[in-house]
Length: 501
Image 1 (tube, rainbow, N blue to C red):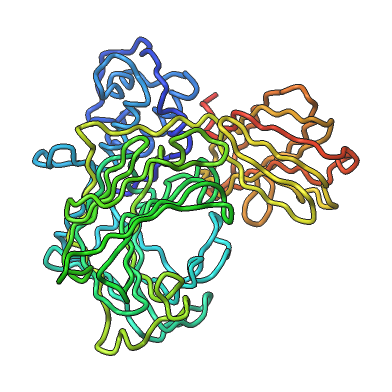
Image 2 (cartoon, rainbow, N blue to C red):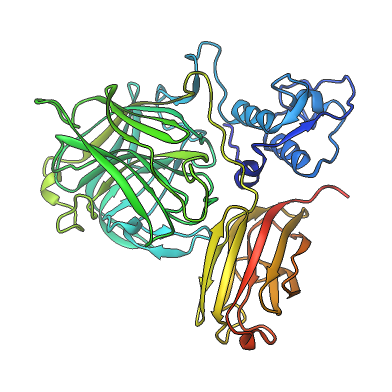
């Protein structure tokens, strides 16, 4: 089973890059995409090409020819995209034209090289810390890896009325399943097509939807959400298609339209749900009948067509209760399960390029930061190429104001470089750290800020595999508390594996 994790945020930064090939030897790797000549095309080869495009360093002899998958004589982000498609989404010679990825559910179990189970009832942050229960929607089910079956070419997600107790998250009256392709497949644009049906009943909430592979424009919903199909179990004669966008919650907004089935039909019958997603336009279909078109959206501080110009991954789930169709906007309805479990059945999921052309993500030149404010007065805004942090009061804690990049996966013994440009309208100190979940610091750099923009490259080596948090601390450090209101601007933020010495 092949499992490959996409290196996503930095990839988005590369997608408009173009670099002329350096001289290389005539040697070819034995496997397509095997840049390091270790006999396997895998994540290491993706990282090698990505790092070379970022740093204009050197590649092993023969690797440049092997990496030129587009055969145009240059190495560019297009080759990186092709390499990822080869490794993440291999296609058979008889695959339909334009097909980028699919699951026909032909086996006897869920293909976990394509899908991952998302478990529990709690919404967690990137570090696995509790954010809120009910997945942020008052949902009542506990998601398990025991509520799916694959049989006769059909994936079935079963929602059950049963007692379930988790040692950490507590006790629940319902179970179900939620599947995603995060880190296994994502796409920017194209036609996404799913043939599915779902049992009816009050409090059932089937959904086919998409979230950003990387939240390059900030937290939900600044980086967007695309709902291909959501259904109300109590009113199976209709479904809806929606986009969420704007700014970080609660300053987000959405656009939605309903589709009403012809008389005699409902979401309990088999239908093909699809979107066609192009730059600046998303269209929703049921059985090839167009019922909604959206062209107007935004992401605070970023140019249109953000946020729907990045890679999004797929989610399939069947929720019970919650604000969408729960009893009193919360509870599951036990009467729905009087005759046993309820099913959300999926025949296939297919993703196609439109007209043979796949939209490429917009290049992101600076990683976004997440705001952390405790006992202080401040606000953070991510904009194209920059993050602005306005501090009105530092409070008393050094970390009372922070810009964060959470849970960056790093490997033991490898060096990584955090690069950025920074300036401040007031002279003050900033502390930059790289920490694990226990707050152990592996990087700690105090920087004197002035109105003059200054560039920094900070390199750190980690002793073990971990998820590292990168922190720009702007609380009560030095004389910052007496600086008055001021704005710190960080530009061109990047985080990447350091080039070999």
